[in-house]
Length: 230
Image (tube, rainbow, N blue to C red; front, top):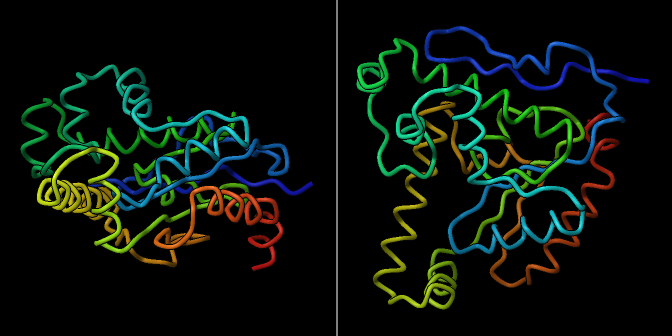
């Protein structure tokens, strides 16, 4: 039976490599529960698709709970960890975070605890929303999914779902899109739109959430074979 050390090492700002305690031993790949990472554009139905996948796969859905787990693991103030989370509007310089937190490598701490939290999820299986999980979890059983949509259709969805004006939806769309892109660049030095970072990219402009779910599950069922033979 093939084994592998779970997870990709994440290099922090100081140049040190981090791997969570749960990843320091070999784990039988075929024994790992099913896990997916979902990275989506605002208004693309990404969150709906993720929750539907969690229901179909009978695993937990992880989004805001990831920050909660980081706070518990790190024992650091929530308001400080929130400053580095992808939902925060505007990422400050590392030097500012270091002053606020009293830790010279605050960003490194965040990445280290994020790494630990994500790998703990893998041991149980789950659907993980955002947080750069597709860059941290690099093992065959984890399928990395990108959900996108055209700007116009995403804004229309947001208007309908949130019952807001076109101008409000446009501003919110651009703000969320910008924050997510900045988070990936700031924390990982990567481009969120790079298709090579994902196993499957789905444009939901003309397909339903149900159809997207069926296609993702189909890909996931053969994911290990595909990745191992690539």
